[in-house]
Amino acid sequence: MSSAPEPQTVVTLTENAAGHVKELLTSETENAGKSLRVYIEKGGCSGLQYGLVFDEIRTDDFVAELHGVSVAVDRFSADYLRGSVVDFVDSLNGGGFKISNPNAQQSCGCGKSFEA
Image 1: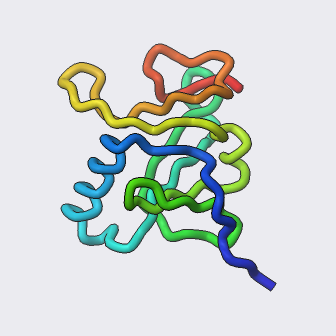
Image 2: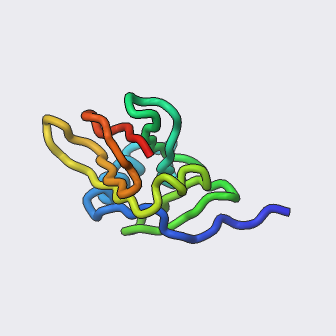
């Protein structure tokens, strides 16, 4: 028996990040109706790395609606991401999505991977 996704805010989005996600959803029609998935996978220079992708919601996901954006996090990633904040920085040097993770004991210089 499958259950509905569990509503719970694992990560938060800043208004700036949510605005950029909405722009991407509007400009990329193949992603219409999808959620922003924030996830962790093995790799990167510190052992684990962050990932962001537009995806369908799965039954075991934690899902939250933040500033008008649906955000999904799988159960494995939730353990590493709980309390994290996703922001979007619009600059020529080092711009893009940035994740501030209180669970990261050490992050690499690129900011895309961390050690738990």
